[in-house]
Length: 149
Image (cartoon, rainbow, N blue to C red; front, side):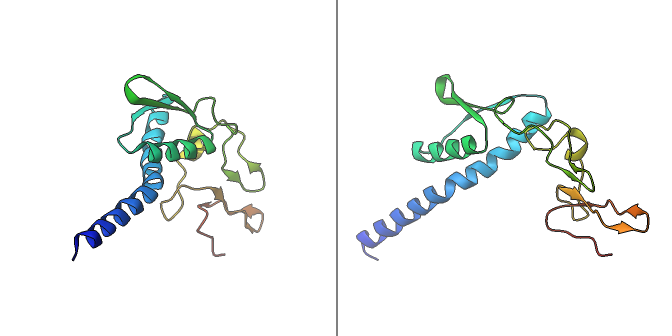
């Protein structure tokens, strides 16, 4: 392999990594933010070690999701969520009632529904509204699973 071929391959690999990195970094941040929110904090202070263009793409993604961003001293970036999200109502859909009216945290769910798990182990987003005689099924379900009545 010639030197210019190796340089081209290396450049393509770096470019691919930089294109994929914002989404991966965003996915890495979410669990950290959720654990901070569950501990009662209203923000996460984070230091990025990635290139500036990658960090800016991640910060843009966070702003689109409704988080507030403020730059602190020594390269620390504060990601806040307490008053940044416009929709602070729980997104769990109760059968025959509609959206839950309780206040939500950064996860989008209230205290009760944050613990609700589907039969497959994922976060439950709604409960089954199928009626069985005079009763409603009410089984907790995620967006992928269904009840089989």
